[in-house]
Image 1: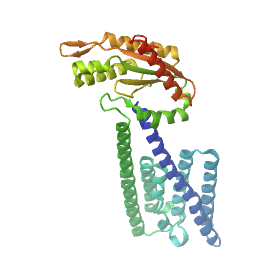
Image 2: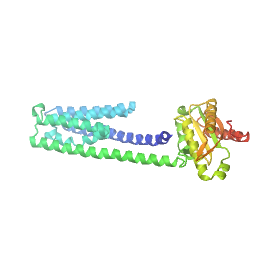
Image 3: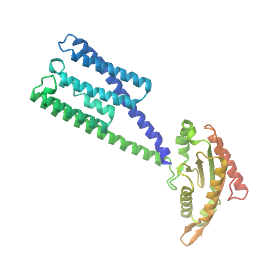
Image 4: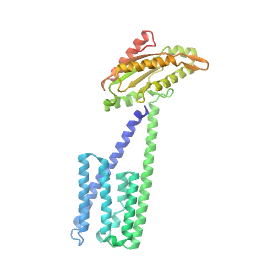
Length: 350
């Protein structure tokens, strides 16, 4: 039942994170490609043709990747490809040296981009790997064609390490903060949709979550059975034994419902002594058997109040829901069947 309540919040959080990653992917693909093309054209007359080849090649592959994403919609794969392209660009640029040996200055934005594309864990690993490779390239100068001073290389590595650590701290605690906020929001939703006495769901849940999920994922619910349960002579029980005993009866029934319903079934307290069950992927005949099982379990398990064994019975109305738009009609029909059970002698399933 809590899964049903948490599902909407989790989906909303995933949508927001996916939107953030799409924006970063689009920025890197379009804006960064534009900058690369501009500098590529400016360096066409450069003696070293490798620089414009790197700039044009990386910019073009960025655009191909974003085009692939627009076609396929596969955000995870597109972000992973973009991260590989970013790493290739950084290593190629540092290998070549850039215009007037300024390649190292262009590296610093990319650790943050990797965190945005990949998430905290994968980005930390990718940045660490990139840092190690860059360190080897800079301190084994015969591996590259660029000419960097040793002091310049050591300052660059130290500065890049600081940038990576700061990006990791920022993203790590941003992620933890979002998780804490999600848990708080889910807790509030659970409290708002839960009856505090029985810890079953309440009527608000039907309107705020069940109806929406039924409309969006009808195949996961239909056909669905609806059962209404009403405790027999509950007012008389309260008058004879007191409200504390009445509360104990309600909690007793709630525990009994949990033992006799499946994990995917939904139990709600919708009134003082009235309960409503939703049984996904269940036809009316099977629901009748479930209701009869619960009715019999009530008779076989009287509530123990000290030395007093308090017998409790209930009446049940059962209906079927085969259409995502007919839930209200199914509840109304089950209520009519409950009325029939009450007026046919109580302690019945209709």
